[in-house]
Amino acid sequence: MALSSAFIKRLRDIMRQDAGVTGDAQRIEQLSWILFLKVYDAKEEDWEFLDEGYRSIIPERLRWRNWAANAKGALTGQPLLDFVDRDLFPTLKALPVSPSTPRRQTIVRETFEEANNYMKDGTLLRMVLNEVDAAINLSDTKQAHLLGNLYESLLRELQAAGAAGEFYTPRPVTDFMARAIRPQIGERMADFACGTGGFLTSWLKAMPAPKTPAEQAAIGASVFGIEKKQFPHRLCVTNLLLHDIDAPNILHGNALTQKNLLDYDDDDRFDVVLMNPPYGGTETAAVRSYFPKDLTGSETADLFVALILYRLKPGGRAAVVLPDGFLFGNDAVKRALKQRLLDDFNLHTVVRLPPGVFAPYTSITTNLLFFDRSGPTRETWFYRLPLPQEGKPFSKTRPMPEDFFAPLEAWWDHRTPIRRDGVDLARAYTPDELRARDLNLDLCGPAAREEEILPIPEALARYQAKRAQIDARIATLTAKLQGLLP
Image: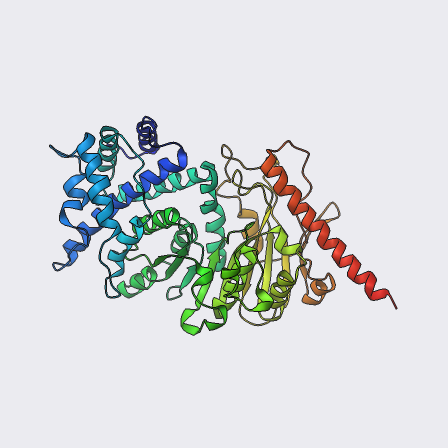
């Protein structure tokens, strides 16, 4: 069977007939554990070939080849449903693991701990299993590459699957950030809210080609991720297996509560951090208790920025997606973080992205911050990246093109100021100039857009962001006026 986008459509059409699958998010979640088991079984064939002593952590009766494969006499209907619900899931959720269990085996239990079988029709489930079994053959190198692209298409659908979109960053964004950070073999990279693994796979793609088995092994061990939610964690693990990472070092947990922030030492730090922290949310007092008082804010993105600062090695590099609110925010925590970025880190580049980069999940305007731990900031370049010439925002039917960052990449190594129609599009500022602005980094920002009618949640989000920006400016002006009083 040919592997193509039609494969995903066939699976969608089958699952839409099942009363237990009520929407796109559940459909993708259902497919995620099925794809994981198929891909894991293919990986186990390789491991068995290379290691005669390899023994699967999955009981023999539960391995894909022995129940899910499209073979004569394979379970279907109610017997298949009973097997999945009463044997497969309970057993995989409770697989015995210990600190000595190899990482490539512990991922099975982690993947299934909070997984669900939503399908209620065993005959339709058999049809899905047959489609997956017939379509995927990882022993075919060309098809393995096609499957990687197909899986990427599946992840893109998350953007339109309600709240599931929060786990997906457009691939042109992650690819550009990885290229700009310039990975080197032997470095360790982390994403502390890794979602489906986009930054991790972009890092691997940007890595120089290995020349020896030792370099290949170093690349395989170079990525580390943590994901709080089980569904994207499962997608991420499968994604890395498809990218030939046999033992994905992807933890299921909350990176903000791994340790008290002040307890991290050199062994906990990384050469590179690439990530898009969750933003717009707040954290509980229990989570905030892991942070020192001057960095104890309630906003999730602020806490992740603090975490990055403490987990980046001396000489390390970071590229982070942050909302506009971080740039112009004037509360104590944001001011403290921006002060540290200027005093203790080299905040060398801020890329102002146009509206709609993360549509339809959110309309909040975002930015890319690039900094390293090489000493204090010497100058910070701000660069506005506009929408394509037609000026239409991105959407589900009009995704960001792969070459969207080409103008920025052409400018990156040969930086010059850009001014057009009296407006700065690219300009460098000294730390003193930024401090004189009361650490308001809202510079070279996107041009105002024409009025448009928005859904109520998006309109509220934009209003709140604009209100925060105005409040920050009022606070800055008030402080300056008070300084003039006798």
